[in-house]
Image (cartoon, rainbow over all chains, first blue to last red; front, side, top):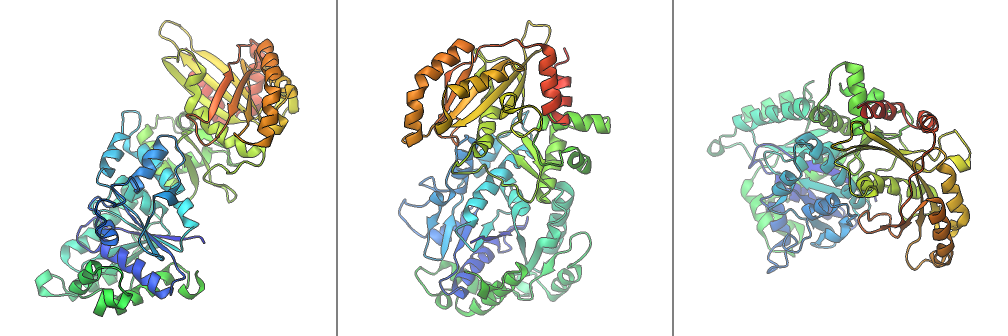
Amino acid sequence: MNAKVVACANMKGGVGKSTVALSFAEGTAHLGQGRLRVLVIDTDLQLNASTILVRDLDGGEPWRQGKTVEDYLRQRAAGQCPKAMSLVHYVDENVQLLSAKLTLVNFERSLLSRDRPTTMVRNDISAWFGECLSQLREHYQLIIVDTPPGLSLLAECALQLADLVVIPTVPNRLSSAGIETYAKYITDELGLVDVGTKSTVLINMKPTPATRTSEKWIEQIKAEAGADSFPYKLFDTQYGMRDGYRRGTEIERPANFQRAWGTVADPILAATRELWSFLDAPLHQRG
Amino acid sequence: MRDMLYALLPEDGNYVALEAAQIALAERTGEEASIDQLGQCIFALVGQAKIDWLPDEKQLRRTLPNHNRSPPWPISCERDLEPWLERYLWQSARGFYSPPPPSLTVVVENTARVPVGTQWTRPDLSMACVTRYLYQPVPVFDLFTFELKLAYDCNVRAVHESLAHSSSANFSYLAVYAPEGDEASVQAETNLPIMLEQAGRHGVGIIQIRDPRRPRDGYRRLLDARRHAPSPAKIDGFIEDRFHSVNKLALRRWVKP
């Protein structure tokens, strides 16, 4: 196995990064009919993806047991050679989790000093996280990194290391402007000029007046796809009914895919198929 | 600056220390690049899969198709051990001084396959250290050499091979990989007393490697090397022949009072 790494990222919050990450994980597991293994790496301090996947374990949550991506990085920073697989939380046969932890930001800050400015610390984290991913790639077909809003050093490293970046967005004025800011930051500040070509935008939420979303902004996002400055691609599928997705992430496991996601199952599966085509890896040939 | 940084890295994929790259870049551009600027260039170049950054060693190199990001494991030959020992040296160079100097600058170079010299004059790794002390008017330069051996090659001959390197280095070490419970390690243990006796007599240091992945407790210095004083011209010649130009440039800068 040599997993593809997908980062779900957007500087703006509330656009559905965790929902999209989880829906791709569940969608891939379902379409793989038991043959595909997916790992979700949560790097968001809100622990949304982790909480949804772990459910109530009465104190046995991976972030309480020292089984998180931060624990890997801490051990690596201390000169040890941690085994990434030993930190993975087993959700079920096909979907597994490397959880986040609330103190991730403190860890990043603790590495900073006068001799080690942010840019150098980011390079160290990138190398350590790269090593972690290369260990994990052996065990999965797909690794999805759910990043926090606003970005963090680890999230920036995820963008750098990912094979594909999925940018969930909402079709309203602020979110559309947000993509522009995000693109500017990635290309100008981070110098990651190639990220544009490996980015795909997924429009989340049906346009309704209540959410200040509209067809106009969908058209604008479509019109800007492929621009020289940030030549992202666009998912044909749009995620439309917000409540359905929320129910999908809240239903108790175990549940089969259709039961968990209900009426939104079809767009999820369609988007998952598209995801694999963006990865140049047809689903039926994997596993 | 990004392109210049890439251009100065060795085409054969050898490593260059961050500080050495910073100095070489300043020579090319005529102005000092801050570590922050350099860090930004590294991040962008890693993102383009053009270079690798080694956080433990603080080194960078061009990415070549056959490169692995992590050192090989498990160890099957001496060559597999080289990157592990290199990592250890970068992290533990201070430990070779007692007490540790107030300021230390290090360059570790893999000299195993440099096409100069014979088996007896070609150490696997070399480490150049420049130390500065509060009341010493000039920096002190020390060249360390390291000969790597697997347990089954652990004998008096290996000590003498390491000793041969002291003709052009200040400190010569023999590093023996002897994992616990290994049959060859048991045999190596029986050779150890005579090796320690010979090494002690000739001032060769011995490092025992139990687990190369653990820089804190996987390496044990059984015997510290004594300082040798080869002719400075010999040391000059050694560095000139075997160190990369970027590292040489940095060393020349560091040894200036």
